[in-house]
Amino acid sequence: KTAFVNGEFLPLENARVSVLDRGFLFSDSVYEVVPFYAGRGFRLNAHLERLERSLALLRIVNPYERTRWHEIIAELIEANGGGDLALYIQVTRGAPERRDHRIPEDIEPTVVAFCQSRAPVDPAVLEQGIAAITHEDTRWRYCTIKSTSLLANVLAADDARSRGASEALMVRDGAVQEGTSSNVFAVIDRRLVTPALRDTILPGITRAAVLELAERDVIDHAEIETLSPAALRSASEIWVTSSIREIFPVTTLDGETVGTGKPGPVWTRMQTALQAMAHD
Ligand code: PMP
Image 1 (tube, rainbow, N blue to C red):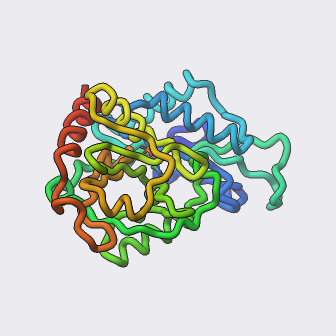
Image 2 (image 1 turned 90 degrees about the vertical axis):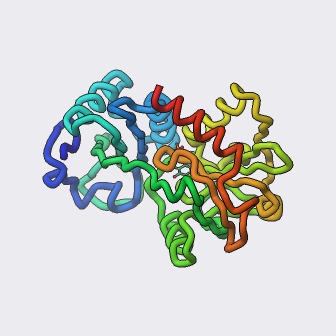
Image 3 (image 1 turned 120 degrees about the vertical axis):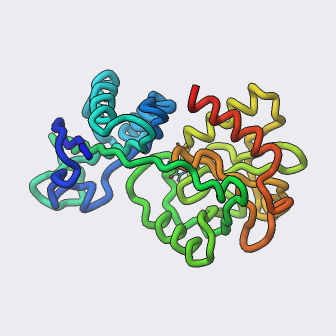
């Protein structure tokens, strides 16, 4: 497996960054995960745009022009054999000489990228759906920045796991925001809804694709200000979306059955449409 570190391609097991790197010391860094289907990136430009926005919000200098990003990524995908991959990119503020909270001047960002295999989705997930829990949203408020400060997400995901669930849905101020690593959709009164974007929601690339497909396929849909936990419990379908999961149907919420307890008809339709879009 080949990784990319600061301009160099090298074996992943030899890839290293400094212990003084601010990504390591302060989580002073941002990341992206891009799914590749048969060697082709799904919405790669949207991911690079989001990376640029995350960097700008943290006042980290974007180390490369868009065309250079494309070259690096193409070379890395090729070096890893193409196919179905998940590309991971991380840009940190860099490694200054001293540990100090204040942002140093004249610092060069650190860039790391590598690939992981993107195994096909477990058929049981598509037949049975997954379990999710609701969870207090203990994250900071700048969730539109795709930063590697993910401790609240990590702990909530672990709480989900310890309760036999595979995703935790973050609830803040009486409203469901998103999952620990996914956006959330629900079918309520025959309408597909998702929380409207705000500070506490990452603008998911898959979320945007699902909304486009709903528009194109004339599925009644809306971005809503408040998705209360009670409304979510009344949903006939709940889904979580992400670049890695695509669209997972949620069939139990806090141990209660969602809808019929099976992936629903709107999910089936959307799943087919998204597969076609990703593979076309
Ligand atoms: N929200 C959070 C907090 C996430 O970590 C992710 C995964 N990147 C998502 C939503 C889904 O975003 P995307 O569809 O772009 O993968």
